[in-house]
Image 1 (cartoon, rainbow, N blue to C red):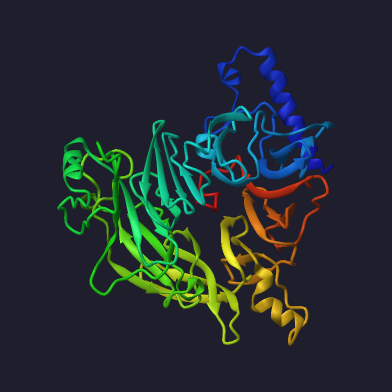
Image 2 (cartoon, rainbow, N blue to C red):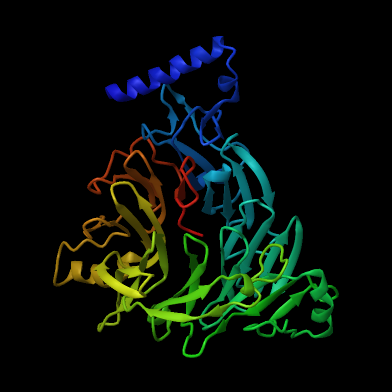
Length: 481
């Protein structure tokens, strides 16, 4: 054990002893930073791992690791393993990480359940059953106040909204993804293999009768279009409206939206050729007072208008903001018919692509900024692209793993070795490391140079599918939503 680690643990022990004999109210509050509660485990740097089939008797578990020591048991007792108490979801696949609210939301595809977990108590909170979500969801999101859930069920062609416990099911054939801004004022839905984007809108009381009178009601606001559906039909509470585009502006196989850090713009990612379309890029969607439903509650984007396109030739399926710089990951179709992974650096102030870099192939589903000026990108099916072909033919030794580290300071790229699909990434900020879920196992990397750390004491039995840093400073340490 390193001297600095012993020193830190000794300091915590001294503080605990002081609190045990002191009458200071600050000790009694049991906070450790940003007003957050000290968890029962006493661990201050926790990474939660969604594990499928951890035993013959269970299809899912939520374990967590002490990311300071890279262990999944108490530092002074190997017989005390860390886990979230009460979790019973089958085949958990995603963790929506909200450390600012001290909660996480875990979706389990095996039984369709959506479970909130308390980071403060390390226990399960509320569970929403598949029956309330209208079956299995391909994409699901919960608002920060936990009052709203939005879920897309592609097989049932339905978009479900749970509003303070009440369920509304909207008809939207082919819907497969939802994106929601942090303030829950704009909720967008995407239909696979189309060029359409839809906005979910909570109706005001004075709008409900108009929606009853006309099933294809148009609110009459600038840029608004007739509703695709309004439900319940006898007294509509929610409608789903197509998003309008300005002259010369279009969507091309849109897949998701990423919202600017100042909240003024939604950047819709156009997958283009990677998804069977024509042109990959970004479509900007301003969020203004006039585009929101007046006096709206919850999702309110009733008159949204896409105003411009930014062409991104390298492909766009995912992205993350760092100030006004937008890092877009995607794939570009090659002459041999295979796809090659690319990272494009976009200046959103000028609308220009300022750099393009070769990264892991595959569908890029994870992106997160970490220490040491690094951006980490995860993908799945990376062994089916151009890099794998080169490694087997003209350029032996070409790395083709599903995890890429990109240094934002010097624009260098490191593609890790292949371990399987990269399904989870958690940036353990302040400790200069990232945790990943690759090929069903947990791995750890140094952000300084991308080298692998010893993962012996964090490996799991079963399939590790997603990871999240429970003690991150902000909800930005999260890549799925």
